[in-house]
Amino acid sequence: MSESTFGSPLSSAPSDDLEAIDVGSATRLLSGGVVALVTSTWRGESNVIPISWHTPLSSSPPLVGVSLEQSRYSTDMLSHAGEFVINIPPKELANHVGYLGSLSGEDVNKFEATQLETFSGRRVAAPLISDCCAWIECEIVERIQTGDHLFFIGLILSAQAHSAIHDGNSFLPKSETTPLHFLGGNSYSTLRESFVARAPSASDAPEEILQSMIEEDLELSREVREKKEEELGKLAKELEKGNVIDTKTLESELGIDLGSIDNLDLSKGIVLDDSNS
Ligand SMILES: Cc1cc2nc3c(=O)[nH]c(=O)nc-3n(C[C@H](O)[C@H](O)[C@H](O)COP(=O)(O)O)c2cc1C
Image (cartoon, rainbow, N blue to C red):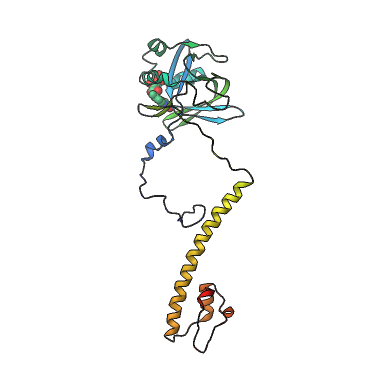
């Protein structure tokens, strides 16, 4: 049992087989999101970079962030272009993703090398990759240096997705095509299962919280009762030996009122009735 309710610093670790992760690698604990193929066009040249470090930032205005290592060719491309497209590839493009991540647009025209087909965006010059599941066109509104990366904040100007695979809220895991997720190294995954978590309603959540608190309190009071019984046992032995007991200290230590105990016979010392403990 944890030592206190609601996880104060006194709570013990949930188990003793916890593994310390090097802080430099701890960002990997956040892996598993969809892969993004970020495209950009500058001076008539287009490039594409697979990334996994991207995040939603705001609904209104609609903002997303993409984090590119400063040395990437794409970092220069995005900086100059001032806009980009997030293309979300399906599982079928996994090998392309690995390949695109092994080349630099500085050395190779990746669209020529991969023969990926593209179509025009609605709002930006960067190409949209035809075989992807969804596309988000962005204008860069801010750049922030974050350690060895440059974080581009993009205002979403337009977004499209295949209706068979996205219902407007989320990708549909049972559809034939689902986005590719990145697990690190050369490992990828797809959504296999979706389920609905039971959301607590405004009325039943406090009850449940209360219930678990009551259970915890019961457990605590059991411990207190056992401790009290143990102390009373020791006390009874002291009395048998004829030792003098300070009743006031006793009352405050044990949280009991000795005045209320009927068979308190001071001529023989204090006799305690267990049923009152
Ligand atoms: C699945 C995957 C995810 C990646 N995620 C990122 C990322 O989030 N940020 C980044 O800067 N590089 C990331 N990379 C590495 C770049 O894709 C890779 O260095 C690429 O060759 C750079 O291309 P460029 O030089 O044309 O810009 C990732 C690579 C792969 C395969």
